[in-house]
Image (cartoon, rainbow over all chains, first blue to last red; front, side, top):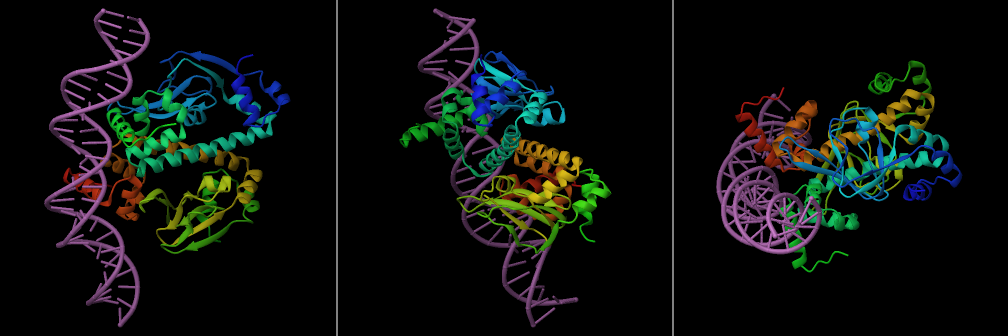
Length: 198
Length: 198
DNA sequence: CGAGCGCTTGATTGAGTTCAAAAATCGTGG
DNA sequence: CCACGATTTTTGAACTCAATCAAGCGCTCG
């Protein structure tokens, strides 16, 4: 059976037992998206959360000037979704796209509800995840309000050391809210000051 | 009885019935904070959500440079809390303070749980509020990533026309992530271009 | 192997900050 | 109710960080 990461995740993170797992696992479908392929387009209603079994996703918006702003990355064992769109059944404001060839588990509302019914600890976990999401967004706002380009980058590589290697630089720049050129200069400056990532 | 706003709110927004209201209303306490008084300090665990019955609150952080960054405002019929701190029982990263003399309803976990037990529609409403919060944070991140000072300000007065009049300008500037001087200039520029708020 | 994409580097520009000080507004005590 | 001190807002000038524009390099993948 594939989806080993997802199973392990449900057990170790969400506290779902082996037995519950069997009952839950009737449902989930997996799907492979190629590098560059879209999982969700602006204007579509988001019907799933995507659990990344293997690979790398990004979500992003495009503003009136045609510029991309990356909202989030998701590599192995992360979820990606447009919560607002899914919850309110509204067209999404953003895009979700595969940065690498990516295997995802499709998680729809029925799955969540079933899992929450079957496993109390899954329900708790889900609530916890929501709160964590808020905390994460809050922190990002704080960084954007106050921190310089360099601080934002340092925070990023600190928080997501694995992503730093896999995500193209211009996408990291977009996530940080700076231009690729600026990021290049920040990195140069850090290197000069003898900063070694990892 | 005071707390009329809170009652009306529960009925009209959260769909709580008159009958349920009587059972729920054993609990909530109200409290008055004077202008400038702190409702929550950094480092404290946040044990309540505050419903603003009358008045105006702000939440803000202070960064390493000693600069304030305003997270959120809350006037009548809004909630203010540090969700993360309350949920995870962690010391809060931020401050909550009264901008005007403010009457708040203190809402603790027991109240939420009781209300959710008694009223199904309250439970739904609460979930909805959480999702809305996420959507709101998301939007703010987008603005901070892409928009100029002017656009951010226009968005603000569009979203919170009432606050624009009651909140000191330097606080709005802090919320927008710009200096008071810059905001003053933005306003001047808008006035010159014959822009009339309201 | 060549075209395109991503990264770097340089020169220039510009939005917003900083510092300073004046003008306007607020609030509080007499 | 007025007056005075404090806070807020405005204005000006110099400066700074990051954006923009432009060009070149190197890699990859078709």
